[in-house]
Amino acid sequence: MDEKTLLNRFQASFKSAQMVGFLEIYKHNWIKGFFSEPWKEYFFVLSNIGLVSFAKPGDSKPLLFIPINDALVIKDPAGQEKKFCIKIFYQNSNQHYILACQSKADQDKWLDSIKKIIYQSVNINAKSDQIMKSQYMDPKEAIQEQDDEN
Image (tube, rainbow, N blue to C red; front, top):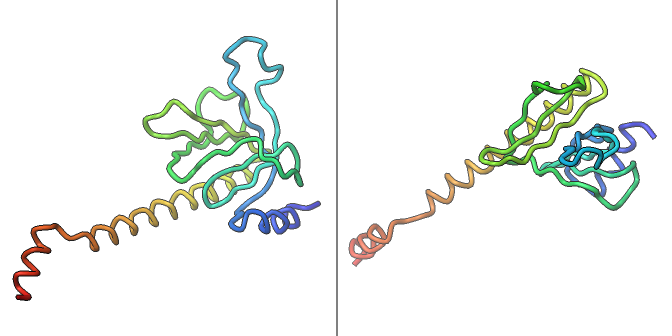
């Protein structure tokens, strides 16, 4: 199954699927020998709220969800043995994910798509805040407005 077919198939389940494909994820080895391999390949679906991983294409049970709406991303973070990595992390948090793409072209596509979703999320949140502020009226202003009407 090619990438376009997979994307179309998952768009039915994830109406906002932006990308699909295989990425490797770094598993932290806190206890020596706990994981046999620090890197593991999974199938990922990028939606408008985050990355969802599956063991293989067609699986219906997700293994991991990585929220990206409030994430920060770094291309090729320092200290990685793998090439074409993307680090996803969060301000004021120790939680982070390191993903490895199969090529520089894939890395650029994934990074651009992730950044686009983060940017859209920031703009939506800013517009929501602006609407909320414009709809909020200070109680003193409301009383003054009522007095002016009478």
